[in-house]
Amino acid sequence: MIRPILIHPDPRLKKVCDPVAEITPEIRQLAADMLETMYDAPGIGLAAPQVGVTKRVIVMDCIKEGDPEPMALVNPEILWSSEDVSTYEEGCLSIPEQYAEVKRPAEVQVRWLDLEGQVQERQFAGLWATCVQHEIDHLDGKLFIDYLGPLKRQMITRKMEKLKRERARA
Ligand code: K2U
Ligand code: ZN
Image (cartoon, rainbow, N blue to C red; front, side, top):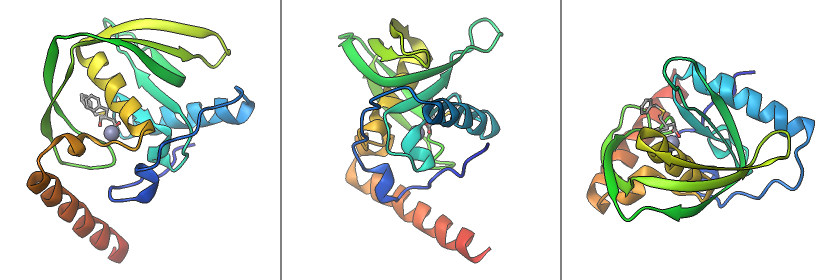
């Protein structure tokens, strides 16, 4: 089912999430709901804390040459990051309509547990490297605006507080 996406500022978006001890039917349902929620947004990535679940689960859709490839990564870890960095104008489903340039390593090697409980390892580059780092940051309570200067971050936070007030009145 589609779950509501938390909007910054929200304490649950700043928490360091707990590792998943075991791949249970609940974890599989969470990943399915996260993918449904991500496609509905629409987005290309989503982290569990964004739907209020402080567990180390992220989903991404690494669209390769057209056919979608939905991925669920449990307890993802970055094993290696390239020296080279790439800059991308990032957004976030928890910080709607706000975009800013963020520099991140251009390639990362990631290890995770898939929904069958198998250990997977893959090197990501391009937009997928940006996306997987953005999502893993969410699991550590880090948002892309934390890479910005204090003034720009404060301006965006004030806009989100205003948006939440308006949504509460609607
Ligand atoms: O985690 C999220 O909030 C979803 C993010 C993932 C993302 C952020 C920056 C760069 C890549 C991925 C996005 O809102 S998904 C929306 C989107 C779609 C296409 C390209 C970039 C961002
Ligand atoms: Zn985000």
